[in-house]
Image 1: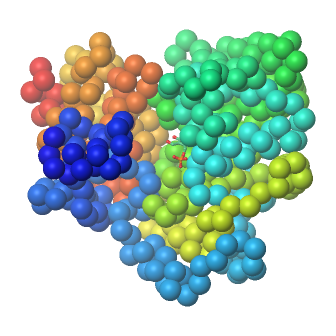
Image 2: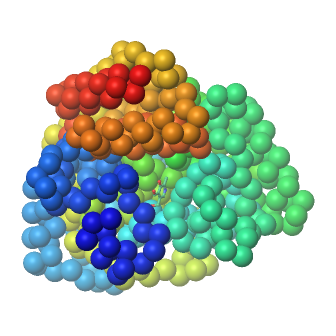
Image 3: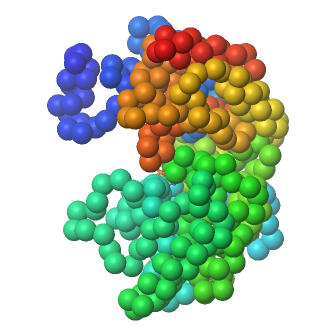
Length: 407
Ligand SMILES: Cc1ncc(COP(=O)(O)O)c(C=O)c1O
């Protein structure tokens, strides 16, 4: 443990995890690059929050300018906030026309679940069983991770995600059984929440329409569909701006976060007017640091850069090259290369250690990435969207060398 680690542990307290056996001390970022305190440069193939690149000048300037001009809470009129909400909601299907700004994806999902309660008058929630939607008391009930203190509530049912042997019909059938059980226990059914890309579940390859039966069933049983777009949204998947569009369905509520402000903490809930009205009537809502002029400036600047630099199309094109390069790697442990746009995974045959070791060795080779999936056997490659062909070449080349070394 070095001195900074010791001080960190002392002052931030125990169990503040870090990536890597020997944690990286980062001091600067630009575009797809990060530098550590010793001056080493890393290719960032992991971080999705700096969506348009670390330290993008358009976002930095917009935030600095607005911060120097005005920053207040949301109980005043402000052109920038309204203009952003109009612009963002225009990217969704008709009807998804209101935006509630918050500060984190967790808050967005907390509101989404409560929209389900307020709109249906029922309590039961269905989610997938290998997921993470955030850290509030309510939302953490959905997490696959540790069991909440006090135990799990009895009005959440968790079902296996689609993918592999679980096709769209089987997924819908298990949701149906979960709803039956919620109703039998007197909770009724309020909502299904799922990430349409199933990022935390290891993003299994699904054909378009694979979620249709589940969506239809939820509606037939009187519930709402919440799409958590915190990871797939804002053009990352290349072919579509939103993950639910790619799967071909229109949710009732969409939650947004991570990439929305390129690191400025802004997140949101997009839904229909009747649903947000039910929520506000049921719960009221005020969030001091959300819907501020600076949040709107950051989020608007992100949309500006996505458009002006053509980043959605770039994610599609560079993502194809990335998957092709990964697919050409020859190693007996590689089972599958999957993903969409600039969200790629390499699935390994791994009995527990292999993928983690690849991640460690890639860091030593100057490329940051991580792993995901219930078996922690999927290499997770999810870089800022300014990733280019030269970065793909470097990543694939270094990964090839690492796999060769590992035999
Ligand atoms: C799919 C998904 N939803 C929600 C969240 C929570 O977002 P936040 O950390 O901003 O609260 C995460 C965070 O990893 C996530 O992966």
